[in-house]
Image 1 (tube, rainbow, N blue to C red):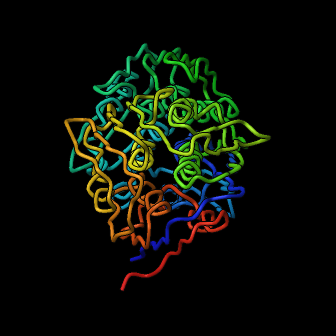
Image 2 (tube, helix red, strand yellow):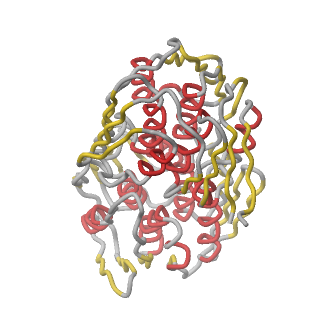
Length: 422
């Protein structure tokens, strides 16, 4: 198993390029099952989750070629319709195969996703939406088994306990494009990744309006064709590098970062004392204030502050002046990084679904353990600014969401390396 070692205290300077968005690439790859023609997907990040999705597609008798950041998918007329537990158990997002398999093959058998360290993430909205389209669904032997002689469009409300669901919206959207008649998805997720999926489906011949709003309007078509598409840049990776510049008092040009996707983060950083402005095809980040200010943050569905940036923002708040309050409205249990940040000298305590962070001027390097993908990123940010050496164990989580992160950070001045644990 690998660990990451960081020698903190430097200032990050230079240019870093953002990779394609994993959370857009995965449903787009799943959507290629909706056609029997070749699809070419560009700007795909070569991450562990992407490789898992490719393995699942191949297990479904789909020909897949992956070269650099391009994936060529050539579906076949196949009777395969099962995504097995050995794949789905390692990647929750593979549940988004349910919609396209059901729409194209009239049946699907997808393993129930396993537990998640950041909190309960039920599939009830997926099932509700697909049932509304006419599917018969049973949960048996750990699998979601769905059948439908014909899917028929319908008005569907996809509201959940914590708002809209990105993956449920993706699943229902992919099923509805081949359903008979019109489907309206109310309280649909508005995330850029849903817009990117819809744009790909439109290139394939789907009729979709309203993507990026809470009401998506789909008129079903009989068939879809192949298409070529380039995945959007990863807003969470971009946001992580923005905070890396802020926490190290750096000066970064972040190429391929879409500033429009970062509005909530930028709003908070303006309050903290960090400048984020559009420059060319990317954004320029630097501090305006010598001492960063505290800030209150509440995670919400897009366009609100993303839950996937909460842990990284907490690392920044740890070295800001004053008391910050970070409230988690999406996954109330997503605070396993708190104890590890405290090991590095942060002063954080939990009160319900909120973390109260008393800023300190200094963190100190320490052995810490990553609990999930974004917690890993938060510990890296803390390590970059901490005095001395930080050793982060269980960094395999990083390989699920950050492409070549150590290399990218080294190129802008970080003293970081990956080594095998003894």
